[in-house]
Image (tube, rainbow, N blue to C red; front, side, top):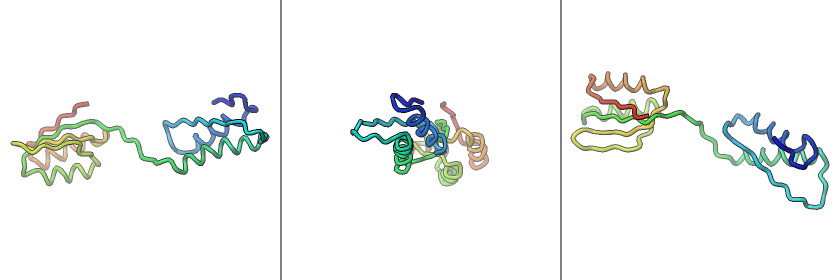
Length: 135
């Protein structure tokens, strides 16, 4: 946090306050102010710096960050439908699929759901599914 030449507590603190109360993590704010000849005063500076960060958050696209692990799954053709249902249930993202002698999937799976996926696929395929966690 820095006021970088502005009066103490008028730039860095207002921006940091907005960041801390935004509910968003892993974000940084940098505001550049070009001197325009009109002095804003300390209240105006606080409002300008904090307001710019608030304005940026209004247009910021947000998404939840989920810790994912790459998983490779090999199944037979008869198990495709039930496997895809399991993928949907745990919010796995299919990165690649190959239909050869067997069906092979490369997935991104939430780390917290790996055990559930392995168990569900084992039940659904009577133990025939091959699941390899690559990360």
